[in-house]
Length: 93
Image (cartoon, rainbow, N blue to C red):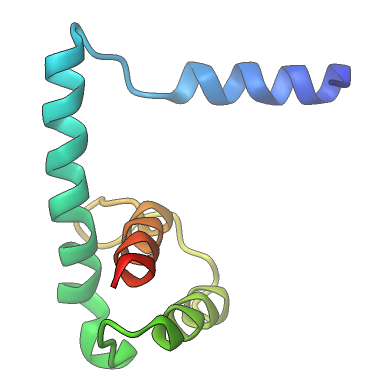
């Protein structure tokens, strides 16, 4: 990995959340998995007209780019994470 790549990876690692234990991390991450997609859909669901089909993931990605690639929604949730969780949901149906 290049020096720039190492610097970027280190910065990314420093920005990751830190947890006191594995059980606390699991609980927090499962809660985020349940709440984050819902927050995105509550805020933008009508405009996105999403159902749980794989084709809608492309619509969601297009919306994100056209919307200016926002990092966070109104409630502070991570929009990229919400899209990621929805992508997992779409892929498992």
